Image 1 (tube, helix red, strand yellow):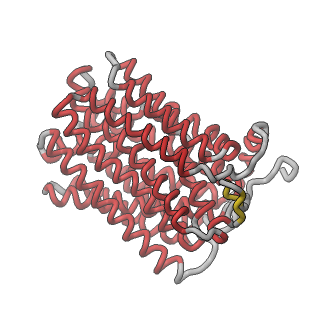
Image 2 (cartoon, rainbow, N blue to C red):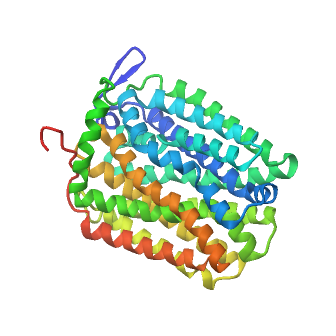
Length: 428
């Protein structure tokens, strides 16, 4: 790697191999981890505040489902455009603006006086969050060595569980003392602290490609060629299946625990926090096992597809939840399934980075993948609301999750084989 003043130079994919400072690499990984913590902490703030919102705004289960998904209305639409901006303008600028914008939206939620105003603030929050996962994939692709991408991606994704755990328990405490409005304002303010730190941490990081903004328009014309790749399609489907479970739990877990275990908000928060904390440990252990025993034992470009299949199969045990009633068993099953799904998702996104030929376009391709998977995530809370309203039970939701996870894992093994090529306009 070559340093020129405060700038860190090197081609994408070579930086991790050339860098002389592991400290700097892990600083970036740590900052991305914290971004996910804050991101999902803000999302958990809504789920734990939902009983209070349900009472204040007189909400039905169907309305709860729509409100839980409302931030995804903009999130899904802007995943790809914001990821293209990320590849063009770089992680420093886009990351800082994104987190700052969603933090403003989070705080404005605390001032909403009706359902419409509140939904509008959630749509704003989704717009700010749109590039965050592409940002994480870009950092990992640029700064992680090939042999460590899977475990690093899994550890970073555990920031989601850390955020959900911290946001759930902190949100319950803040609601108890100050009410749900102040909860949103206080948790929203944390994003500005991260944004300031990101500006400092990334002052030596250049965009992957210093190109004119018009290049992004050309990339939009190229993405259609990705769907000619069976490997890419399988990765997208697997990500959709994992995200369905992820968003269902993130949106409905406190209310499910209150109904299933017959507990109050505080105890639902404590049990939910335990689910997220244990899930993070399970994900890290599974990620390490996947890298050490499977990827190394079966070397090859697409070896991680086996990790995806195995851990999605483990996550499918969530389908047994209707038959479990003891508190400890419910918490353990949710935590194990959620942790296995995260490990599978981490391997799936690392697989995308491994197979993509055009390494400098990882942000754009990740954004396209997330557009589809987050659309599926948007459906999960809404569908659950209708299922609960119609059956007064969550059982069918867990069966749907289990079937989807099994499908995603099997398709990964069956279809993911070859390199993913994003052809240029000339090639197509």
